[in-house]
Image (cartoon, rainbow, N blue to C red; front, side, top):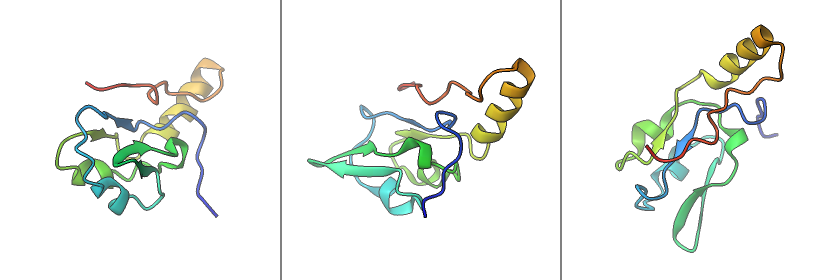
Amino acid sequence: MKLRYLKNVVTLSFCSQTCMNCGVCMDVCPQGVFDQKDGNVFVADRDACMECGACQRNCPFGAVTVRAGVGCAQAILQGAIRGKEPNCGSSDRGCS
């Protein structure tokens, strides 16, 4: 069974322009968030991310960022405060 949190709340950001397609993120991710096709690494399942931070800590090129352990909790709290659906709005972030 694949672990799921809330949809679209993960703080994971991936910059394909910075990525050198080494595949380290795929090796260290316990949830299979990353995949590779035609030699290019990409985020295959963003909502499976559990924000452990392994990808960011191990990416030698700085192509991955994630605020370890905050997205789900932050989205729930912000949604409750605002009376809206949980959504931290960070899943659409591009390269910085």
